[in-house]
Length: 257
Image (cartoon, rainbow, N blue to C red; front, side, top):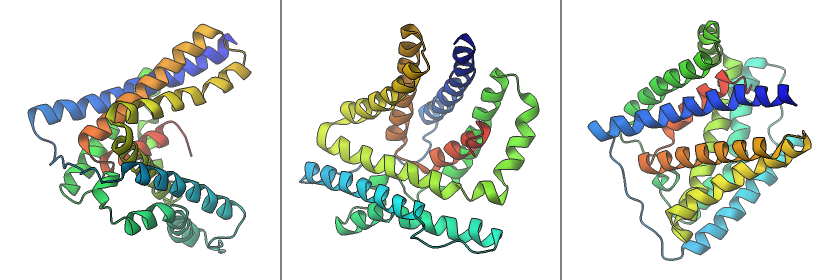
């Protein structure tokens, strides 16, 4: 049990420090030099309807995902290059298509999913720099300095890059639900509810592993607090392009794929 606790701490603490530093850098930059134009998003006349439709769209995403798992979307070919560079990204577009269909039907702009072409190069550049800082902090705290070049090389490999659309669309879906939740219940609940649910989702696994109550509560507050800060940063920056880059590189650093 002690080894499991040390292993969990060896992961969550460096990861938390990395993401906290990344968010802190954005706030510091935005305080002294406006990062990019922070666009306002107008609340629609029927926010609860949009929230309910948003939840239906998310159910649709899960349903299409099940179709993919069952092999009913675009089938793989015998070519590794085509599968990774074309088939897998296209299947991701299909999986998340209910979300984009709802945006079209409700005539909502891309701003309602925190995407804007304004300052695109700046956002991409900042995302890359913030990712490097986060990676250095993560591997530095873990004493894995020798992994830095390995992470960068792995991040630009075709097999790894093919996962970027899935990661980015996950961020799109989160921003999509967050904005509609904010419309319906306000910013505090829009941040608090997902953070609480994300932290709570880790509790059953910790209980099953026999972790002590103090350990479970510590990690509950750590994961919940970290999620709160990331969501608040996303809300303040009104952008998931730079966060998508960060999410991708950090996933490479933690060996998510």
